[in-house]
Image (tube, rainbow, N blue to C red; front, top):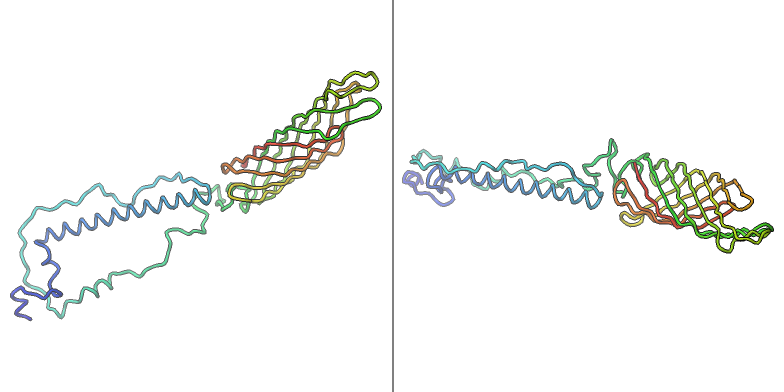
Length: 310
């Protein structure tokens, strides 16, 4: 064996790694290229993780990432092959007994595998609104389900269909369909909503409306203004689609423009049911039914609502 070492002949398993290259410069260049390629692969892997995190936030939380992505390694400097020089062979080699097998070196360098994802699927994502982190609910701002107290503003124009005709000794007061608009504002806590609301509703007299004492048609209108305590609850259905129910209790005053200039006021009540679709974290569109109770022209309302979260 020693004679083989002196003559430069080695078994395949005992041959030094350096003999696989023509010279030391080739070996250095080869390893520089490998390190450069590994950096490129790590950059690609980092970019894929960033894209995966961004898609995860967009799909599950409806978020968009504004953070600029940058690769961790600079690949602008390509390794250059050094000028070939004369390689002086070092005949002083360790003995076969002093050399350890390649397998033992691999086991020594190999790190233990760690069963760990690149990110935690149960985490709320990287976006935060103030000190509150978003949840998986379709509303991720403050005041949505599970994220504390928040504010809301709901504007609801509607078409009002009267369902009662006032018939007495003085007049027959029948009304056409009219218009209504409501505005409610207050606070959200989870799915519950509580605040204050105000509404305005107007109906014109139908062509059959009649002043019985004179026999002439009524041509005026009836207007109602109401203020109420707004209560409601919202619940998730599918994706960004939610259902809602609402109740309002308060006070109304109405003015009817007939020959008697009739004025009334009293207890006001309203109830609502409908669907809400969340387009963004701050805006949702509502479509629903509302019952509007007051003495002169109680009505059924078909309303379209614009819901803003703060």
